[in-house]
Image (cartoon, rainbow, N blue to C red):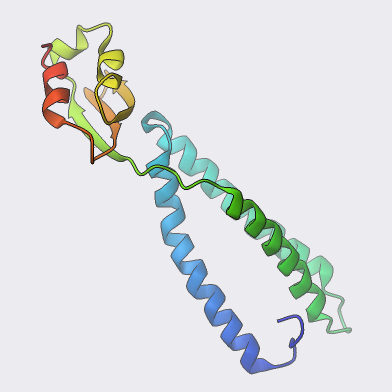
Length: 162
């Protein structure tokens, strides 16, 4: 876009592709944040994500406004600055490891389970259980599980106190 800032058709195609990718990320990233954070921290994690997202939108608009020189119609500087930011993001993204996919399962906290002082330890010892969060006030146990290995009957046995 920086090399053809005055070609309306290239700009239109580039913007179309950008907003297609943007809409996919806009829908999938908050879900990923909620899926991969600790069960007890979903609200905090999504709040931090949303704050970062809107702070980024503000800073992006501010930077674009600072790079634009009124009267000079110097759009290519803005495109080059964005290209540098994207290149930095790409380097960071390529070094990331693919996170393990874990599903969240919610169980009712039984009286027998509530009496167990080592409930979390016993659940974590089961195959396929990666994280456990016990919420006594909600009467619920949240488990992050690997669906391929996880045995629901074993979890139910621990919750039953056996």
